[in-house]
Amino acid sequence: MARLGCEAGAIWIKVLVVILLVCLCFYGLQGIYGFSLFPDEFGYWASAASLLGYDFSNVSAIGSFYSFGYSLVLSPVLLIFEDSIAAYRAAVIINLVFQCLSFFILICISDKLFEDADKIFKALLAGACVLYPSWVFYTQMTMSESLLFFMYTVVVYVMLCYLERPSLIRGVLLAFAAVYIYSVHMRTVGIVATVFIVVVADAFFRFKKSGGNGESSGRHGLITLSTVVLLAAGFIVCLIIKDHVIDVLYSSGQMDRTYVNDYSGQVSKLGSLFSLKGMDDFLKSLCGKILYLGCASFGTAYIGIYYLTKRALKIDLKALSILIASFMQFMVMCIYLSGSSGWDRFDLFLHGRYFDFCIPILMMTGIYDLFQNGDHYRKIIISALIIAASALFSCLLVIANSTGFSDPHGMLMIGMSYFLDDEDVKPLETIIFNVMFSLLIMCIILLIVSIYIKQANVYLLCFIHLLLIVLSYHACNHFIYACQTYIYGDIQVADEISDLRIAGYEGDIVLLYEGGLEYIDTVQLRLRYEHINVVYVDNLDALSSLKEDDLVLVDYRSALNEQLPGTYNSSWESGHFELYYNDVGGTDL
Image 1 (tube, one colour):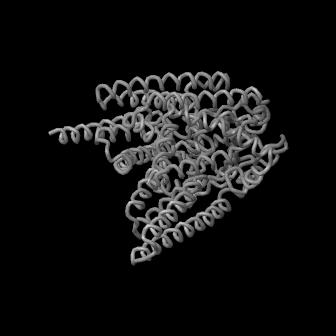
Image 2 (image 1 turned 90 degrees about the vertical axis):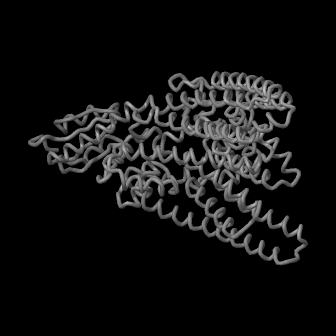
């Protein structure tokens, strides 16, 4: 009867978590009209559009290179839905499906990692993972991170299955999953490296255990070789496709910005690590990332790392594989952002985006260790001390930063954005308030664990779920819902151009681009059949290239708004743009 009650409780928890995820997604869906982050989101849609024969190259070339894996998901959406708003919302719903699937995969992962835990506890642990605020946040926009969270759970699960019983099918699935997550975002190269290391290490230990004798050694060798070859081949194919995408979408801009997200811009950073200054920059950047990891997970990720390390030291390859994946991805992030302590981007100093998808599983292992293995006071206190120490060093670096970290980009550091004011950026206060908040939550977690030990009431974990739900809503409301009024205004600009086309206006659509965020992305996605020409405005002479029948778009705050009314007799303002054109019988240039 107890077993039946446990299974019934686990089913109800699963149903409740899925309902919560659906409610969190659909709550604001009707108020979402398009992109929240520029130009990142558009980069993925541009590749998807290119697969269907649309030409967004002039607009996409304004930004830097964005990978193509997520575009394979977006292409069918773009094919099915003609309206850009419907397509965007459909993509968000697909992200929700990925998130719900991840929940059940995480339960399977917990089955393999925590064999002694009951089903209700495992379901609650998995629920805490998918309610991680960054995951909920990225689900409601078309950043590749929404797919990275899902694919990372897939990679970890298949990797654990492979370690249990290697087979050719599992090896192929593992190689495919690793290559695909790499195609989604090429900074997940750490995951590809992890799969290679784990597969080879598994083969080594099995060979050592068998003494190199028997048919099984030869079979394992063949499986290992096949997996590694597929992994290498997939990696090379991704690089070839990447070069093609760059040629098609990112080669027509005024200047080449692909180096920002490409390996070509990172080689010098790797080399600099061998110098004193380079190592100094790396270690300073490291402080902010360690702080983010602690605050975003309320110290549970630190405890998860400790738990996995204990198991890895006993040659537990399952724990070791997750530990290596987390470490490799953390190092990729730190190397890429080496020197960020001296930049003006506050988010790049703290940053979580390149590593966020690894944090939920670390949280899951940490929460498990707290509730099941005792010594919770010591673990919480040590985690709090790590947060406090990294916060102290981070505050000193903030004080030393000559720019004052004036550019926050809070949506790329969701785990430490809860006290961030984009209009009045105060980095020191942001760090201090986030640390104080994290320490408070850690005290609450400590209290919950203490009560759990006395009462053995596993449903106490629901308090952690409630906290994550509140923080998730705060992040979505602050960074997504609040900005959609202007996005809808840009949609109206695109619709006005469509109406002008119907009325017989056949001139080119021209964007006079003066720098800044690429809000034109929303207009281009809405006008998928149009090829928007981009004129880079270095000075007012750029106006000489305009034709009398052009439909000209310019930023509504631009100084060009004083010049263009003398050339065009009609204008229309909405969102971020002023649209200029000549009525029939208008002035000639």
